[in-house]
Image 1 (cartoon, rainbow, N blue to C red):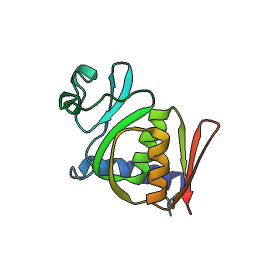
Image 2 (cartoon, rainbow, N blue to C red):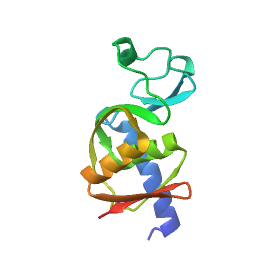
Image 3 (cartoon, rainbow, N blue to C red):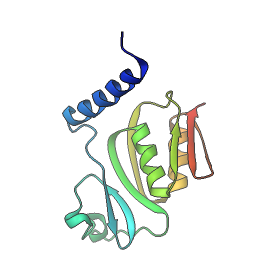
Length: 138
C-alpha cells in the first residue's frame, strides 16, 4: 500500500512527466517582459525579453496598465487561471472541481475582466480577496 504523502509525490511527478511527454496540444506559455510589462506568449522570449510583438507590428494598440493579450486554442482552465494570478500578482486557490480546458483569446483586456469572463463561460464562482483568487464550480 502506498502512503498518502508518497502518493502525492508520485502524482506530482507523474503530472510533470505527462506534461513533458504531451504533444504540443497545450503548448508552452512563456512569461516575458516588454516595456516593463509582463506578457504571456506561446513562443520563447527573445533574449529573455520580447523584442517585438507581431500584433503591434500589424497596427494594433499596445496594452496599457493591467491589460493583457492572450491567445490559446486549447489551454487547461487551471493553467489559464494561474496565468491570471501570476499576471495580477495574486495567488490561486482553485478547488479540484475546477477542470477542463478551452480557447482563450483576449486582446488588451483588463485581467479582472478576463477572470470574470472565464468564470462565466466555465460556470465558476471566483472572488479575489487578500491577494488570492479563489475559484470553485457554481
